[in-house]
Length: 347
Length: 253
Image (cartoon, rainbow over all chains, first blue to last red):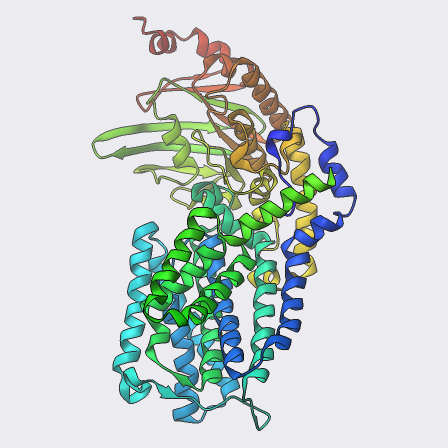
Protein backbone atom coordinates (compact mmCIF):
# COMPACT_ATOMS: atom_id res chain seq x y z
CA UNK A 1 0.00 0.00 0.00
CA UNK A 2 2.97 2.20 0.45
CA UNK A 3 4.11 1.90 -3.12
CA UNK A 4 3.02 4.11 -5.91
CA UNK A 5 0.71 2.24 -8.18
CA UNK A 6 0.38 3.08 -11.81
CA UNK A 7 -1.18 0.00 -13.36
CA UNK A 8 -1.74 1.55 -16.75
CA UNK A 9 1.97 2.26 -16.92
CA UNK A 10 2.91 -1.41 -16.65
CA UNK A 11 3.48 -3.49 -19.70
CA UNK A 12 4.04 -7.20 -19.93
CA UNK A 13 7.59 -6.69 -21.09
CA UNK A 14 8.85 -3.97 -18.79
CA UNK A 15 8.20 -6.11 -15.77
CA UNK A 16 10.55 -7.52 -13.15
CA UNK A 17 12.97 -4.65 -12.81
CA UNK A 18 10.39 -2.39 -11.17
CA UNK A 19 9.87 -4.73 -8.27
CA UNK A 20 13.33 -6.18 -7.76
CA UNK A 21 14.71 -2.67 -7.72
CA UNK A 22 12.21 -1.62 -5.14
CA UNK A 23 12.87 -4.64 -2.96
CA UNK A 24 16.60 -4.22 -3.23
CA UNK A 25 16.85 -0.60 -2.22
CA UNK A 26 15.34 1.41 0.57
CA UNK A 27 12.37 3.51 -0.32
CA UNK A 28 13.34 7.05 -1.13
CA UNK A 29 12.72 9.76 1.40
CA UNK A 30 9.55 11.14 -0.14
CA UNK A 31 7.95 7.68 -0.16
CA UNK A 32 9.01 7.16 3.42
CA UNK A 33 7.41 10.45 4.50
CA UNK A 34 4.20 9.60 2.71
CA UNK A 35 3.81 6.15 4.22
CA UNK A 36 1.49 5.88 7.19
CA UNK A 37 4.01 4.17 9.42
CA UNK A 38 6.93 6.47 8.64
CA UNK A 39 5.57 9.92 7.99
CA UNK A 40 2.14 9.70 9.49
CA UNK A 41 3.11 8.56 12.95
CA UNK A 42 6.01 11.04 13.20
CA UNK A 43 3.74 13.86 12.07
CA UNK A 44 1.14 12.92 14.67
CA UNK A 45 3.75 12.89 17.45
CA UNK A 46 5.16 16.21 16.24
CA UNK A 47 1.71 17.84 16.25
CA UNK A 48 1.03 16.48 19.72
CA UNK A 49 4.36 17.84 21.04
CA UNK A 50 3.89 21.30 19.53
CA UNK A 51 0.18 21.76 20.12
CA UNK A 52 0.33 22.74 23.85
CA UNK A 53 2.17 25.95 22.81
CA UNK A 54 -1.08 27.12 21.26
CA UNK A 55 -3.39 26.10 24.06
CA UNK A 56 -4.14 29.19 26.12
CA UNK A 57 -6.85 28.17 28.57
CA UNK A 58 -8.90 25.35 30.05
CA UNK A 59 -11.48 25.56 27.30
CA UNK A 60 -8.82 24.91 24.66
CA UNK A 61 -7.54 21.92 26.60
CA UNK A 62 -11.07 20.66 27.00
CA UNK A 63 -11.68 20.69 23.26
CA UNK A 64 -8.33 19.10 22.41
CA UNK A 65 -8.66 16.31 24.98
CA UNK A 66 -12.14 15.53 23.64
CA UNK A 67 -10.70 15.38 20.13
CA UNK A 68 -8.12 12.87 21.33
CA UNK A 69 -10.74 10.73 23.07
CA UNK A 70 -12.99 10.70 20.01
CA UNK A 71 -9.99 9.92 17.80
CA UNK A 72 -9.25 6.75 19.82
CA UNK A 73 -12.80 5.52 19.21
CA UNK A 74 -12.68 6.38 15.52
CA UNK A 75 -9.28 4.74 14.93
CA UNK A 76 -10.79 1.51 16.30
CA UNK A 77 -14.02 1.92 14.37
CA UNK A 78 -12.03 2.47 11.18
CA UNK A 79 -10.63 -1.07 11.50
CA UNK A 80 -14.20 -2.39 11.56
CA UNK A 81 -15.74 -0.12 8.91
CA UNK A 82 -12.84 0.88 6.68
CA UNK A 83 -10.94 -2.39 6.62
CA UNK A 84 -13.36 -5.21 7.38
CA UNK A 85 -16.24 -3.39 5.66
CA UNK A 86 -18.69 -4.04 8.52
CA UNK A 87 -20.91 -1.23 9.77
CA UNK A 88 -21.71 -0.44 13.39
CA UNK A 89 -24.28 2.16 14.42
CA UNK A 90 -23.91 1.24 18.07
CA UNK A 91 -20.37 2.12 19.05
CA UNK A 92 -21.41 5.06 21.23
CA UNK A 93 -23.12 2.37 23.31
CA UNK A 94 -19.76 0.70 23.99
CA UNK A 95 -18.16 4.10 24.60
CA UNK A 96 -20.92 4.96 27.09
CA UNK A 97 -20.72 1.56 28.73
CA UNK A 98 -16.99 1.97 29.32
CA UNK A 99 -17.63 5.42 30.78
CA UNK A 100 -20.41 4.19 33.08
CA UNK A 101 -18.52 1.13 34.32
CA UNK A 102 -15.72 3.47 35.40
CA UNK A 103 -18.21 5.96 36.87
CA UNK A 104 -20.31 3.46 38.81
CA UNK A 105 -17.43 1.35 40.11
CA UNK A 106 -15.39 4.34 41.32
CA UNK A 107 -18.22 6.57 42.60
CA UNK A 108 -20.56 3.98 44.11
CA UNK A 109 -18.29 1.10 45.07
CA UNK A 110 -15.00 2.87 45.73
CA UNK A 111 -13.07 0.77 43.23
CA UNK A 112 -9.79 2.29 42.10
CA UNK A 113 -10.04 4.03 38.70
CA UNK A 114 -7.09 2.12 37.31
CA UNK A 115 -8.88 -1.12 38.17
CA UNK A 116 -12.27 0.05 36.89
CA UNK A 117 -10.86 0.94 33.46
CA UNK A 118 -9.66 -2.58 32.51
CA UNK A 119 -12.78 -4.08 34.13
CA UNK A 120 -14.89 -1.88 31.85
CA UNK A 121 -12.79 -2.80 28.81
CA UNK A 122 -13.02 -6.50 29.61
CA UNK A 123 -16.76 -6.32 30.31
CA UNK A 124 -17.46 -4.50 27.06
CA UNK A 125 -15.22 -6.96 25.24
CA UNK A 126 -17.23 -9.91 26.55
CA UNK A 127 -20.52 -8.19 25.76
CA UNK A 128 -19.34 -7.27 22.25
CA UNK A 129 -18.27 -10.89 21.70
CA UNK A 130 -21.66 -12.21 22.81
CA UNK A 131 -23.44 -9.75 20.52
CA UNK A 132 -21.10 -10.22 17.57
CA UNK A 133 -21.51 -13.98 17.14
CA UNK A 134 -25.16 -13.77 16.00
CA UNK A 135 -25.12 -10.21 14.66
CA UNK A 136 -22.13 -10.48 12.34
CA UNK A 137 -23.82 -13.21 10.34
CA UNK A 138 -25.85 -10.33 8.98
CA UNK A 139 -24.50 -7.83 6.51
CA UNK A 140 -25.31 -4.47 4.98
CA UNK A 141 -28.58 -2.90 6.09
CA UNK A 142 -29.37 -5.75 8.47
CA UNK A 143 -26.09 -5.36 10.31
CA UNK A 144 -26.68 -1.61 10.57
CA UNK A 145 -30.13 -2.27 12.07
CA UNK A 146 -28.86 -4.84 14.55
CA UNK A 147 -25.98 -2.69 15.81
CA UNK A 148 -28.34 0.28 15.96
CA UNK A 149 -30.57 -1.82 18.21
CA UNK A 150 -27.65 -2.73 20.45
CA UNK A 151 -26.71 0.93 20.87
CA UNK A 152 -30.29 1.93 21.62
CA UNK A 153 -30.71 -0.77 24.26
CA UNK A 154 -27.52 0.29 26.03
CA UNK A 155 -28.67 3.91 25.92
CA UNK A 156 -32.10 3.04 27.34
CA UNK A 157 -30.68 0.92 30.13
CA UNK A 158 -28.30 3.71 31.13
CA UNK A 159 -31.11 6.29 31.07
CA UNK A 160 -33.62 4.17 33.00
CA UNK A 161 -31.59 2.52 35.75
CA UNK A 162 -31.38 5.76 37.70
CA UNK A 163 -30.57 4.04 41.03
CA UNK A 164 -27.27 2.98 39.55
CA UNK A 165 -26.48 5.48 36.81
CA UNK A 166 -28.19 8.66 37.93
CA UNK A 167 -30.58 8.42 34.98
CA UNK A 168 -30.86 11.21 32.39
CA UNK A 169 -29.18 13.70 34.75
CA UNK A 170 -25.95 11.75 34.67
CA UNK A 171 -23.63 11.24 37.60
CA UNK A 172 -20.47 12.59 39.15
CA UNK A 173 -17.22 10.67 38.65
CA UNK A 174 -14.29 11.02 41.04
CA UNK A 175 -10.98 12.02 39.45
CA UNK A 176 -8.52 9.31 38.56
CA UNK A 177 -5.89 8.70 41.22
CA UNK A 178 -2.39 7.54 40.50
CA UNK A 179 -0.36 6.61 43.56
CA UNK A 180 -2.58 8.64 45.84
CA UNK A 181 -2.41 11.80 43.72
CA UNK A 182 -5.52 12.94 41.91
CA UNK A 183 -5.01 13.37 38.17
CA UNK A 184 -6.63 16.66 37.50
CA UNK A 185 -6.71 19.47 34.96
CA UNK A 186 -6.36 19.95 31.21
CA UNK A 187 -2.56 19.82 30.79
CA UNK A 188 -2.15 16.50 32.62
CA UNK A 189 -5.04 14.91 30.77
CA UNK A 190 -3.63 16.22 27.52
CA UNK A 191 -0.58 14.00 27.90
CA UNK A 192 -2.55 10.99 29.12
CA UNK A 193 -4.92 11.10 26.15
CA UNK A 194 -2.07 11.91 23.75
CA UNK A 195 -0.22 8.80 24.94
CA UNK A 196 -3.34 6.66 24.59
CA UNK A 197 -4.00 8.01 21.09
CA UNK A 198 -0.45 7.36 19.90
CA UNK A 199 -0.73 3.83 21.29
CA UNK A 200 -4.08 3.32 19.53
CA UNK A 201 -2.70 4.58 16.21
CA UNK A 202 0.42 2.44 16.53
CA UNK A 203 -1.60 -0.71 17.31
CA UNK A 204 -3.95 0.05 14.44
CA UNK A 205 -1.12 0.54 11.94
CA UNK A 206 0.44 -2.72 13.13
CA UNK A 207 -2.73 -4.72 12.63
CA UNK A 208 -3.39 -3.20 9.23
CA UNK A 209 0.03 -4.27 7.97
CA UNK A 210 -0.20 -7.87 9.18
CA UNK A 211 -1.84 -11.15 8.19
CA UNK A 212 -4.86 -10.15 10.31
CA UNK A 213 -5.24 -6.82 8.47
CA UNK A 214 -5.01 -8.50 5.09
CA UNK A 215 -7.56 -11.11 6.16
CA UNK A 216 -9.93 -8.28 7.14
CA UNK A 217 -9.51 -6.44 3.84
CA UNK A 218 -9.69 -9.78 2.05
CA UNK A 219 -13.05 -10.74 3.53
CA UNK A 220 -14.25 -7.24 2.74
CA UNK A 221 -13.18 -7.67 -0.91
CA UNK A 222 -14.55 -11.19 -1.37
CA UNK A 223 -15.86 -13.23 1.49
CA UNK A 224 -15.93 -16.57 -0.37
CA UNK A 225 -12.41 -16.10 -1.71
CA UNK A 226 -11.12 -15.29 1.76
CA UNK A 227 -12.79 -18.44 3.11
CA UNK A 228 -11.29 -20.51 0.31
CA UNK A 229 -7.89 -19.15 1.34
CA UNK A 230 -8.47 -20.44 4.88
CA UNK A 231 -9.70 -17.25 6.53
CA UNK A 232 -12.36 -18.05 9.12
CA UNK A 233 -14.32 -14.95 8.15
CA UNK A 234 -16.83 -15.04 11.02
CA UNK A 235 -14.01 -15.27 13.53
CA UNK A 236 -12.19 -12.29 12.04
CA UNK A 237 -15.32 -10.14 11.91
CA UNK A 238 -16.03 -10.93 15.55
CA UNK A 239 -12.40 -10.26 16.45
CA UNK A 240 -12.31 -6.79 14.89
CA UNK A 241 -15.75 -5.93 16.29
CA UNK A 242 -14.57 -6.79 19.81
CA UNK A 243 -11.28 -4.94 19.32
CA UNK A 244 -13.03 -1.75 18.18
CA UNK A 245 -15.60 -2.03 21.02
CA UNK A 246 -12.81 -2.39 23.59
CA UNK A 247 -11.02 0.67 22.21
CA UNK A 248 -14.29 2.62 22.47
CA UNK A 249 -14.74 1.43 26.07
CA UNK A 250 -11.23 2.53 27.08
CA UNK A 251 -11.84 5.95 25.49
CA UNK A 252 -15.14 6.11 27.40
CA UNK A 253 -13.43 5.42 30.72
CA UNK A 254 -10.86 8.14 30.02
CA UNK A 255 -13.66 10.56 29.08
CA UNK A 256 -15.54 9.83 32.31
CA UNK A 257 -12.54 10.56 34.53
CA UNK A 258 -11.49 13.57 32.50
CA UNK A 259 -14.83 15.38 32.63
CA UNK A 260 -15.60 13.95 36.11
CA UNK A 261 -19.14 13.54 34.88
CA UNK A 262 -21.06 11.12 32.70
CA UNK A 263 -24.48 11.44 31.09
CA UNK A 264 -26.45 9.18 28.74
CA UNK A 265 -25.88 11.51 25.77
CA UNK A 266 -22.41 9.94 25.50
CA UNK A 267 -24.09 6.66 24.62
CA UNK A 268 -26.74 8.12 22.32
CA UNK A 269 -27.62 7.12 18.77
CA UNK A 270 -26.53 10.55 17.53
CA UNK A 271 -23.09 10.01 19.01
CA UNK A 272 -22.82 6.64 17.19
CA UNK A 273 -23.68 8.34 13.92
CA UNK A 274 -21.08 11.00 14.63
CA UNK A 275 -18.37 8.35 15.12
CA UNK A 276 -19.25 6.68 11.82
CA UNK A 277 -19.29 10.07 10.08
CA UNK A 278 -15.79 10.80 11.40
CA UNK A 279 -14.53 7.60 9.77
CA UNK A 280 -16.17 8.39 6.44
CA UNK A 281 -15.22 12.08 6.40
CA UNK A 282 -11.56 11.43 7.21
CA UNK A 283 -11.35 8.61 4.69
CA UNK A 284 -12.28 4.93 4.83
CA UNK A 285 -9.45 2.56 5.68
CA UNK A 286 -7.12 5.42 6.59
CA UNK A 287 -5.91 5.55 10.19
CA UNK A 288 -4.91 9.19 9.99
CA UNK A 289 -8.12 9.93 8.15
CA UNK A 290 -9.86 8.64 11.27
CA UNK A 291 -7.84 11.03 13.43
CA UNK A 292 -8.51 13.96 11.10
CA UNK A 293 -12.21 13.10 10.95
CA UNK A 294 -12.32 13.22 14.75
CA UNK A 295 -10.48 16.56 14.74
CA UNK A 296 -12.85 18.11 12.19
CA UNK A 297 -16.11 16.93 13.67
CA UNK A 298 -15.15 17.73 17.26
CA UNK A 299 -13.69 21.12 16.39
CA UNK A 300 -16.25 22.38 13.89
CA UNK A 301 -19.20 22.60 16.29
CA UNK A 302 -17.00 24.65 18.64
CA UNK A 303 -15.88 26.96 15.85
CA UNK A 304 -19.39 27.28 14.51
CA UNK A 305 -20.90 27.95 17.93
CA UNK A 306 -20.99 31.67 17.10
CA UNK A 307 -23.57 30.98 14.43
CA UNK A 308 -25.91 29.73 17.15
CA UNK A 309 -29.08 28.54 15.43
CA UNK A 310 -27.39 27.92 12.11
CA UNK A 311 -24.57 25.81 13.56
CA UNK A 312 -26.08 22.44 12.57
CA UNK A 313 -26.98 23.68 9.09
CA UNK A 314 -23.48 24.96 8.37
CA UNK A 315 -21.95 21.75 9.76
CA UNK A 316 -24.19 19.73 7.47
CA UNK A 317 -23.29 21.85 4.45
CA UNK A 318 -19.56 21.51 5.11
CA UNK A 319 -19.89 17.74 5.38
CA UNK A 320 -21.87 17.55 2.15
CA UNK A 321 -19.34 19.73 0.36
CA UNK A 322 -16.42 17.56 1.52
CA UNK A 323 -18.12 14.33 0.51
CA UNK A 324 -19.02 15.68 -2.93
CA UNK A 325 -15.60 17.16 -3.62
CA UNK A 326 -13.56 14.38 -1.94
CA UNK A 327 -15.68 11.22 -2.04
CA UNK A 328 -12.85 9.04 -0.75
CA UNK A 329 -12.53 11.21 2.35
CA UNK A 330 -9.97 13.83 3.29
CA UNK A 331 -6.76 11.93 3.88
CA UNK A 332 -6.83 9.40 0.99
CA UNK A 333 -7.66 12.13 -1.52
CA UNK A 334 -5.03 14.51 -0.22
CA UNK A 335 -2.23 11.91 -0.01
CA UNK A 336 -3.03 10.81 -3.57
CA UNK A 337 -2.64 14.44 -4.65
CA UNK A 338 0.66 14.89 -2.84
CA UNK A 339 1.97 11.57 -4.17
CA UNK A 340 1.15 12.62 -7.72
CA UNK A 341 2.89 15.92 -7.13
CA UNK A 342 6.00 14.22 -5.67
CA UNK A 343 6.15 11.79 -8.58
CA UNK A 344 5.93 14.64 -11.06
CA UNK A 345 8.62 16.62 -9.23
CA UNK A 346 10.81 13.51 -9.04
CA UNK A 347 10.62 12.60 -12.73
CA UNK B 1 -4.16 -44.52 -2.56
CA UNK B 2 -6.60 -41.89 -3.74
CA UNK B 3 -6.46 -38.19 -2.90
CA UNK B 4 -10.15 -37.44 -3.25
CA UNK B 5 -13.01 -39.92 -3.14
CA UNK B 6 -16.62 -38.97 -3.87
CA UNK B 7 -19.17 -41.62 -2.89
CA UNK B 8 -22.84 -41.60 -3.82
CA UNK B 9 -23.13 -37.84 -3.62
CA UNK B 10 -26.43 -36.12 -4.43
CA UNK B 11 -27.75 -32.63 -3.89
CA UNK B 12 -31.04 -31.03 -4.69
CA UNK B 13 -32.15 -27.42 -4.70
CA UNK B 14 -35.89 -27.24 -4.24
CA UNK B 15 -37.16 -29.82 -6.72
CA UNK B 16 -34.08 -29.72 -8.93
CA UNK B 17 -31.72 -32.68 -8.67
CA UNK B 18 -28.42 -30.91 -9.44
CA UNK B 19 -26.17 -33.91 -8.78
CA UNK B 20 -27.41 -37.49 -8.60
CA UNK B 21 -25.64 -40.39 -6.97
CA UNK B 22 -22.17 -39.57 -8.21
CA UNK B 23 -19.06 -41.68 -7.54
CA UNK B 24 -15.53 -40.99 -8.66
CA UNK B 25 -11.95 -40.86 -7.37
CA UNK B 26 -9.03 -38.57 -8.05
CA UNK B 27 -5.50 -39.93 -7.91
CA UNK B 28 -2.66 -37.74 -6.67
CA UNK B 29 -0.39 -36.08 -9.19
CA UNK B 30 -2.87 -36.00 -12.04
CA UNK B 31 -4.83 -33.42 -13.97
CA UNK B 32 -8.41 -34.52 -13.58
CA UNK B 33 -10.99 -32.73 -15.68
CA UNK B 34 -14.71 -32.48 -15.10
CA UNK B 35 -16.60 -31.49 -18.22
CA UNK B 36 -20.17 -31.33 -19.36
CA UNK B 37 -22.67 -29.08 -21.08
CA UNK B 38 -24.00 -25.95 -19.36
CA UNK B 39 -26.07 -26.81 -16.32
CA UNK B 40 -24.57 -30.28 -15.99
CA UNK B 41 -23.66 -29.63 -12.35
CA UNK B 42 -19.92 -29.02 -12.68
CA UNK B 43 -19.72 -25.92 -10.50
CA UNK B 44 -22.21 -27.40 -8.03
CA UNK B 45 -19.95 -30.41 -7.67
CA UNK B 46 -16.94 -28.15 -7.09
CA UNK B 47 -18.87 -26.16 -4.51
CA UNK B 48 -19.70 -29.36 -2.66
CA UNK B 49 -16.09 -30.55 -2.66
CA UNK B 50 -14.90 -27.16 -1.33
CA UNK B 51 -17.57 -26.95 1.37
CA UNK B 52 -19.74 -24.15 0.02
CA UNK B 53 -22.68 -26.57 -0.30
CA UNK B 54 -23.23 -29.66 1.83
CA UNK B 55 -24.41 -32.69 -0.18
CA UNK B 56 -27.93 -33.97 0.60
CA UNK B 57 -26.62 -37.54 0.67
CA UNK B 58 -23.28 -39.27 0.12
CA UNK B 59 -19.80 -38.65 1.40
CA UNK B 60 -16.56 -37.04 0.26
CA UNK B 61 -13.13 -38.09 1.52
CA UNK B 62 -9.80 -36.30 1.24
CA UNK B 63 -6.88 -38.63 1.99
CA UNK B 64 -9.49 -41.05 3.41
CA UNK B 65 -10.63 -38.43 5.93
CA UNK B 66 -14.35 -37.64 5.61
CA UNK B 67 -14.79 -33.97 4.73
CA UNK B 68 -18.50 -33.92 3.93
CA UNK B 69 -20.10 -30.73 5.24
CA UNK B 70 -16.85 -29.19 6.54
CA UNK B 71 -16.59 -25.40 6.19
CA UNK B 72 -14.50 -23.92 3.33
CA UNK B 73 -11.83 -22.45 5.62
CA UNK B 74 -11.41 -25.83 7.36
CA UNK B 75 -10.92 -27.51 4.00
CA UNK B 76 -8.28 -24.95 3.06
CA UNK B 77 -6.40 -26.10 6.15
CA UNK B 78 -6.57 -29.69 4.86
CA UNK B 79 -4.94 -28.69 1.59
CA UNK B 80 -7.77 -27.66 -0.73
CA UNK B 81 -7.52 -24.49 -2.79
CA UNK B 82 -9.69 -23.21 -5.60
CA UNK B 83 -10.42 -20.48 -8.10
CA UNK B 84 -13.81 -19.12 -9.10
CA UNK B 85 -15.63 -19.08 -12.39
CA UNK B 86 -16.99 -15.59 -11.77
CA UNK B 87 -13.89 -13.81 -10.48
CA UNK B 88 -13.59 -13.34 -6.72
CA UNK B 89 -10.87 -10.69 -6.51
CA UNK B 90 -10.25 -8.29 -3.63
CA UNK B 91 -10.41 -5.26 -5.86
CA UNK B 92 -9.21 -2.51 -3.55
CA UNK B 93 -6.09 -4.44 -2.56
CA UNK B 94 -2.91 -4.70 -4.60
CA UNK B 95 -2.33 -7.80 -6.69
CA UNK B 96 0.44 -8.87 -4.32
CA UNK B 97 -1.80 -8.45 -1.26
CA UNK B 98 -4.41 -10.65 -2.95
CA UNK B 99 -1.81 -13.39 -3.24
CA UNK B 100 -0.68 -12.71 0.35
CA UNK B 101 -4.24 -13.42 1.52
CA UNK B 102 -3.82 -16.81 -0.13
CA UNK B 103 -0.80 -17.34 2.11
CA UNK B 104 -2.91 -16.70 5.24
CA UNK B 105 -2.61 -20.16 6.81
CA UNK B 106 1.18 -20.11 6.66
CA UNK B 107 1.56 -16.85 8.59
CA UNK B 108 1.51 -15.81 12.22
CA UNK B 109 -2.06 -14.57 12.54
CA UNK B 110 -2.32 -14.32 16.30
CA UNK B 111 -4.05 -11.01 17.06
CA UNK B 112 -1.75 -10.03 19.91
CA UNK B 113 1.41 -10.71 17.88
CA UNK B 114 -0.01 -8.66 15.02
CA UNK B 115 -1.05 -5.79 17.30
CA UNK B 116 2.46 -5.60 18.75
CA UNK B 117 4.14 -6.28 15.41
CA UNK B 118 6.36 -8.99 16.86
CA UNK B 119 9.41 -9.94 14.79
CA UNK B 120 7.82 -13.28 13.92
CA UNK B 121 5.05 -11.40 12.10
CA UNK B 122 7.32 -9.14 10.06
CA UNK B 123 9.73 -11.97 9.30
CA UNK B 124 6.90 -14.22 8.12
CA UNK B 125 5.45 -11.42 6.01
CA UNK B 126 8.79 -10.72 4.39
CA UNK B 127 9.34 -14.35 3.43
CA UNK B 128 5.75 -14.68 2.25
CA UNK B 129 6.10 -11.57 0.10
CA UNK B 130 9.14 -13.07 -1.60
CA UNK B 131 7.36 -16.37 -2.22
CA UNK B 132 4.24 -14.61 -3.51
CA UNK B 133 6.27 -12.49 -5.93
CA UNK B 134 7.84 -15.71 -7.27
CA UNK B 135 4.41 -17.27 -7.69
CA UNK B 136 3.11 -14.21 -9.51
CA UNK B 137 6.09 -14.30 -11.83
CA UNK B 138 5.56 -17.99 -12.47
CA UNK B 139 1.99 -17.41 -13.67
CA UNK B 140 3.15 -14.45 -15.77
CA UNK B 141 2.05 -11.59 -13.53
CA UNK B 142 5.50 -10.18 -12.81
CA UNK B 143 4.45 -6.80 -14.21
CA UNK B 144 1.44 -6.40 -11.96
CA UNK B 145 2.88 -6.93 -8.51
CA UNK B 146 2.05 -3.50 -7.07
CA UNK B 147 -0.94 -2.89 -9.30
CA UNK B 148 -4.30 -2.35 -7.71
CA UNK B 149 -6.26 -5.51 -8.50
CA UNK B 150 -9.36 -3.57 -9.56
CA UNK B 151 -7.39 -1.92 -12.36
CA UNK B 152 -6.08 -5.15 -13.91
CA UNK B 153 -7.41 -6.70 -17.13
CA UNK B 154 -9.65 -9.75 -17.03
CA UNK B 155 -7.08 -12.24 -18.32
CA UNK B 156 -4.57 -11.18 -15.66
CA UNK B 157 -7.18 -11.54 -12.91
CA UNK B 158 -7.81 -15.13 -13.97
CA UNK B 159 -4.14 -15.82 -13.38
CA UNK B 160 -4.14 -13.81 -10.16
CA UNK B 161 -6.74 -16.23 -8.80
CA UNK B 162 -4.45 -19.14 -9.65
CA UNK B 163 -1.49 -17.45 -7.93
CA UNK B 164 -3.61 -16.75 -4.84
CA UNK B 165 -4.75 -20.38 -4.70
CA UNK B 166 -1.18 -21.63 -5.12
CA UNK B 167 0.07 -19.37 -2.32
CA UNK B 168 -1.70 -21.70 0.12
CA UNK B 169 0.59 -24.55 -1.07
CA UNK B 170 -2.40 -26.85 -1.62
CA UNK B 171 -2.41 -30.61 -2.19
CA UNK B 172 -5.44 -30.32 -4.43
CA UNK B 173 -6.14 -27.30 -6.62
CA UNK B 174 -9.61 -26.93 -8.11
CA UNK B 175 -9.90 -24.59 -11.08
CA UNK B 176 -13.39 -23.53 -12.11
CA UNK B 177 -13.36 -22.65 -15.82
CA UNK B 178 -9.98 -20.90 -15.79
CA UNK B 179 -10.20 -20.27 -19.54
CA UNK B 180 -13.76 -18.89 -19.64
CA UNK B 181 -13.85 -15.58 -21.46
CA UNK B 182 -10.26 -15.78 -22.66
CA UNK B 183 -9.10 -15.61 -26.27
CA UNK B 184 -7.10 -18.36 -27.96
CA UNK B 185 -3.66 -17.00 -26.98
CA UNK B 186 -4.64 -16.40 -23.39
CA UNK B 187 -6.19 -19.87 -23.21
CA UNK B 188 -2.94 -21.37 -24.39
CA UNK B 189 -1.02 -19.42 -21.74
CA UNK B 190 -3.39 -20.64 -19.02
CA UNK B 191 -2.89 -24.16 -20.38
CA UNK B 192 0.84 -23.86 -19.87
CA UNK B 193 0.38 -22.53 -16.36
CA UNK B 194 -1.87 -25.46 -15.44
CA UNK B 195 0.57 -28.02 -16.79
CA UNK B 196 3.40 -26.32 -14.91
CA UNK B 197 1.40 -26.41 -11.68
CA UNK B 198 0.64 -30.11 -12.12
CA UNK B 199 4.31 -30.86 -12.79
CA UNK B 200 5.24 -29.18 -9.53
CA UNK B 201 3.31 -31.93 -7.74
CA UNK B 202 -0.07 -30.32 -7.12
CA UNK B 203 -3.05 -32.42 -8.11
CA UNK B 204 -5.33 -30.36 -10.35
CA UNK B 205 -9.07 -30.66 -10.80
CA UNK B 206 -10.11 -28.73 -13.85
CA UNK B 207 -13.74 -27.86 -14.41
CA UNK B 208 -14.09 -26.83 -18.02
CA UNK B 209 -16.58 -26.18 -20.67
CA UNK B 210 -14.06 -26.06 -23.49
CA UNK B 211 -13.38 -29.65 -24.66
CA UNK B 212 -10.33 -28.68 -26.65
CA UNK B 213 -8.38 -27.33 -23.67
CA UNK B 214 -9.27 -30.35 -21.59
CA UNK B 215 -8.38 -33.04 -24.13
CA UNK B 216 -4.84 -31.78 -24.53
CA UNK B 217 -3.74 -31.69 -20.91
CA UNK B 218 -5.91 -34.05 -18.85
CA UNK B 219 -4.86 -37.44 -17.51
CA UNK B 220 -8.42 -38.35 -16.69
CA UNK B 221 -11.80 -36.92 -17.64
CA UNK B 222 -15.19 -37.15 -15.96
CA UNK B 223 -18.16 -36.17 -18.11
CA UNK B 224 -21.33 -34.96 -16.39
CA UNK B 225 -24.74 -34.49 -17.90
CA UNK B 226 -27.86 -33.50 -15.95
CA UNK B 227 -26.06 -34.18 -12.71
CA UNK B 228 -25.11 -37.76 -13.57
CA UNK B 229 -21.92 -39.39 -14.66
CA UNK B 230 -22.08 -39.81 -18.41
CA UNK B 231 -18.61 -41.21 -19.01
CA UNK B 232 -15.20 -41.42 -17.40
CA UNK B 233 -11.70 -42.33 -18.49
CA UNK B 234 -8.71 -41.17 -20.50
CA UNK B 235 -9.23 -38.38 -23.05
CA UNK B 236 -9.14 -40.89 -25.90
CA UNK B 237 -11.73 -43.14 -24.32
CA UNK B 238 -14.01 -40.21 -23.56
CA UNK B 239 -13.70 -38.79 -27.04
CA UNK B 240 -14.66 -42.13 -28.54
CA UNK B 241 -17.67 -42.59 -26.25
CA UNK B 242 -20.89 -42.28 -28.25
CA UNK B 243 -22.85 -40.97 -25.23
CA UNK B 244 -20.43 -38.05 -24.88
CA UNK B 245 -20.66 -37.24 -28.56
CA UNK B 246 -24.43 -37.31 -28.28
CA UNK B 247 -24.52 -34.99 -25.26
CA UNK B 248 -22.15 -32.50 -26.85
CA UNK B 249 -23.30 -32.56 -30.43
CA UNK B 250 -26.90 -33.56 -29.94
CA UNK B 251 -26.48 -36.59 -32.22
CA UNK B 252 -28.69 -39.58 -31.62
CA UNK B 253 -26.37 -42.45 -30.75
